Length: 159
Image (cartoon, rainbow, N blue to C red; front, top):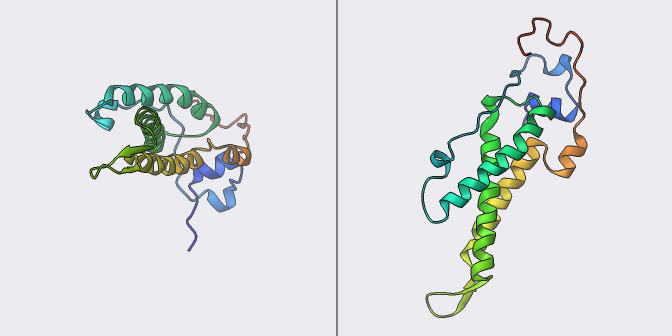
């Protein structure tokens, strides 16, 4: 069974067709509100740096996403996931850079740094979020920007 694409993905990719997609849920675009990173990331070693990284990523990508897509605040969790995953990738990279790819294990033998496993996990999460948001080069190449109609918002409620 093939998973159905979200309507917003059809808009981003330029494959939206009213005759096929009009009966599906379409959320109006809205400003995304940045989460309180303390509730998302919590506390712990290096948490302040991870929170700062996630916030920096949010501030860099949200304006571009808002301008290029019909993303809604109701869909912000995928953006939060993207920001958190990228911040965690950077955190794992810092740990690997500090401690090395191999570390001394409990038996005194060199073993793979556990941060590499964390890095791979978050890299996969990041990859999926990039595709969902159209942020990978291949996903961005499939996106067709649709010029709004003159009467796209006749009531002016989205101005």
